Length: 309
Image 1 (cartoon, rainbow, N blue to C red):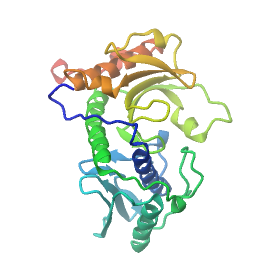
Image 2 (image 1 turned 90 degrees about the horizontal axis):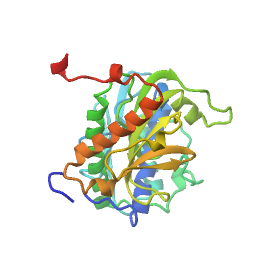
Image 3 (image 1 turned 180 degrees about the vertical axis):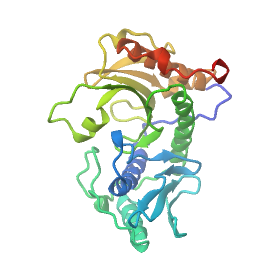
Image 4 (image 1 turned 30 degrees about the vertical axis):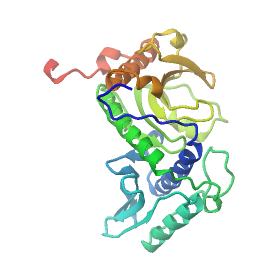
């Protein structure tokens, strides 16, 4: 790896259970936010954010909208923290051996103490686990070293994605963490409505893909790709997009459920002299591949430098 960056190796293999333990923690927190937040387009009201200490929900309203509370996975101190606008605060330690069930019960206990009522579906989403959160004892693998490296990587990616986000005049989502798949993402929209999905499509997809979009993200690996990677896809995918060139040279197109997805492997990024500029170039090349074929007004949507105004 070249000097000049704080990025570190982030192996998926050997850390699967630690990643899944964190994923389940984030799903619990995210479902709490979902249960108390007013709907916003494209599920932007359920996500989490990378912040100075770890992962956070940001303010969530309760008590008929009179007060707010925030849940933070403080990775610096390895604690779960709940703070309210009424001045209440509580926390508990995050450590190896803390089961998902214990995490859930402790967090629900704090909310109960603060008279915060939450009604949620108490099962993981799309992880193949049928047990309720309060019953999951098989996952208790909070590896502080791995999770700290993962958070610091997300923190770096958050900054690059925000820089890229600022180059576009059109509708753009916040840079945020989707807890269903535990990826950090940012999405651009052309303003044009997408073709309606089939009636049997999942409600999560129907709301996410109401309009033409180009999305960019990073995830820490899974059983299909056993290493961290950056991705981009255009929805709907225009014909021939997978023939468009990508930067850098080791980025490539792959099939993802029948649709082309641009991929830049994290480990390949680490070999670059300037990882930040390389990632920005990857995102720009993937954007232009989709936007040009989908007839987006690229020039009108591009934010110029202040000197050019």
